[in-house]
Image (cartoon, rainbow, N blue to C red; front, top):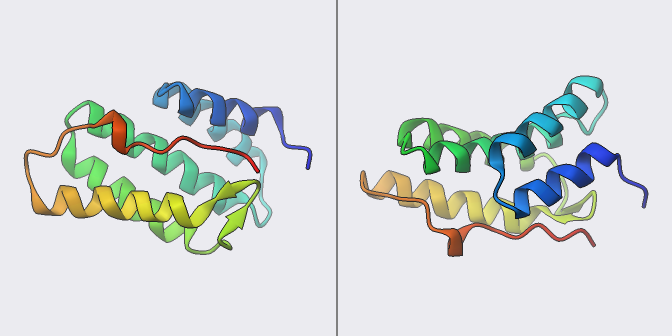
Length: 118
């Protein structure tokens, strides 16, 4: 499947843990899209911003973004645009649970998914 360059750049930047820039690049694609993929892109934007907020210690904002990530991605099948959506929702749920259980939650690289396009 052919993917938009901005989508591919998002995946690359996310895997480099450049959450700010990957959020920005996908926002352009999201704004250009008014079709059924729009909320999928929004979910990925929220996922990146959730990790950015977590890195910055903004736990309430991170919690809200992980929750909205789950909502947005729940509208899509288990595999969509080459990504394992169910794994992303599971990961967001893990972090949401962590944030709900402890005010001392911190970013842990080992618990951040690596995005792999099928």
